Structures are given as structure tokens and as C-alpha cells.
Length: 193
Image (cartoon, rainbow, N blue to C red; front, side, top):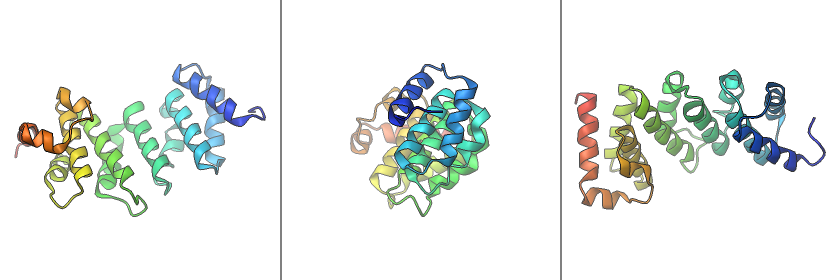
């Protein structure tokens, strides 16, 4: 069990999770606590600990949090499953669903995370549906600028463009330099359209 000073113990476990030194028993305890935890802040920290220190053995625990109606928890769960644990092929439908938007994602943070995760996934593997959706989002003038920018950066990442590894570029600068047109042309070419 955790000592009485839970935040301190959580911080220590997170540090050790990042070092990948937690035992299976400790990770099992984190998973059990996460399933029962009600505090959003503590749930986030426990989930991050499980994501950094764990593996696909805890997939069901993390998967259950994808649609927790808590955007920050859902974002992190998505990052863990796609980026940390590399389970992207099993979550294509989830990515597409989140990229379309979910009603409880009031500020679009889950949608933005799904867009970024789609780009990270496509940098390593292929999926024509994800690629087509990113192209669609990149060219949708009715979408908020932030979402179009996220989709353009995701396409850039999927194509291994060095500029896409930095978030300091605005879509206006990218458009002025021709990078948006270049990215879209190459993405369409790889899609075969």
C-alpha cells in the first residue's frame, strides 16, 4: 500500500516508471488504484505512471479510460496506447472516431490528440483511411485553424518532414513558404489520389 503521503508516493512511482524500474506487483497496484480513483488529478498521475512504466498487459485498464468523458484522461490514454505502447493498428477506428469529434470533448483536445496520434502512427505504418482523413481535415476551410494546423503538422510528421517536429510554425507561414501545398501533394500521392 501507498504511504499516507499519497502525492509524494505517486511522484516517486512516476519517477521510477519513467526509469522503467517498477515491478509488475507495483504496476498491478497502480492499475488497481487507477480503476478505483475518483480524483481527476490523481487519476491522471496514476495513468501516466502506468503508461510510462507498464506495457500492453494493462491495455484493458487504459482502454476503458478512452471514453471516460474526461478529455485529459482520454488524451493521455490515447497517447499511451498509440505512442507509448505502439498499439495503433488496434485503434484505427478509435482514432477515426475521435478525429470526427466526440460530444464530451468541449474544447477539441481529444480530437487534437487523435490527429497528432494519427500522424505519429502514419510515420511508422500505413492506413489509407487515416491518411485520407488527415488530408480532409487539412483542407477543410470550415474547420478551426488549430485543427487544420494540427492536421497539417500530423501529415508532415507522417512524411518525416523535419519542420513538422517543431510546433512554432503557423499555418500562414507554412502556406507562404509552400510547405502546405508540398505536404498535401505528397500525402495525396502516397494515397494515390
